[in-house]
Length: 359
Image 1 (spheres, rainbow, N blue to C red):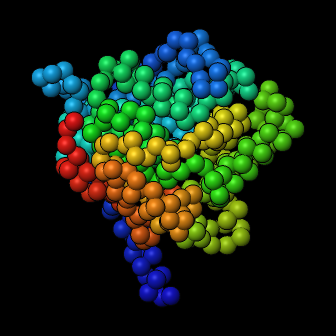
Image 2 (spheres, one colour):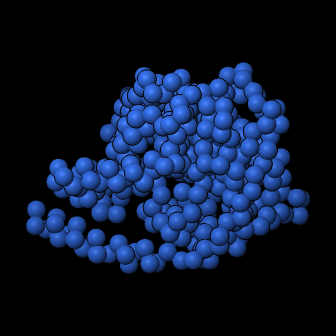
Image 3 (cartoon, rainbow, N blue to C red):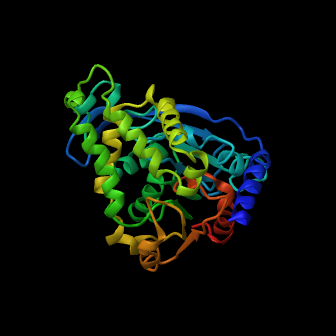
């Protein structure tokens, strides 16, 4: 135990040094793309849907007019592309000389439907907003690239958590569009087991909250706190949680601080819709359609996608050029949140890009 404590202390002391290694990267350029008469898989439609996005770098085409350097990067549930503009992710990937050097690649980080500054329930429609699913979100991303940015091919498509699940769908729905795929912190199977249970807890807490008022509340219902606490719980690993909250009093303080930091911006309808969107996710039946080299990366301490289920190992063999990596638990992993700490899997991304041919 003494040795383990010493390792924990050493890792804690090294963290500032590791963060300092993240190099400077260009600031993204932000814009909106508006789609007219967008029809959702539910049969509902909107006269227009706005997709907010960030780009870094410039598009480069080959002699045949094919875009060769586009990289689509998709965020997680209730997040936005802005969540990936930080030292742990962008600083390890987008800076000069890094694997996704913005002077070489054209990087696109959109806000998915229902998230960030894209069209979402809290814009005004509340619970009358169309019920979107992951396939609607992927369709909107595809239109952003092809119609909005005039990109006809991607060097890489990758994503974290929900964005990782979108990556599997991209590989199936548009198998010739990309050279390589990298889903992070996700599984190629429908939402089930504990993964479905924690989502249902949040969905039920909001829908059964009298203050939700069918989505027409004047102020945020108390169930928003429950939702944010559950998201906090699932996002890390028990060792980190114990380290930051080693007593009952400290645990309550840590949770309260984490929730307070988000209460001013969180919206019950947006959270409800974002969690419900995963209900149409089921890439399992079509994994053989994926043509591009695919590297799936999970971490052993991920509470949402635990390796003991064996799902990733079982299903990856059905992907023609698929490979799976489960990062062992260590002092550098962050549970489900390991997807944003690029130092953990950056070298594997380099190998993927080195071995994935242009198509």
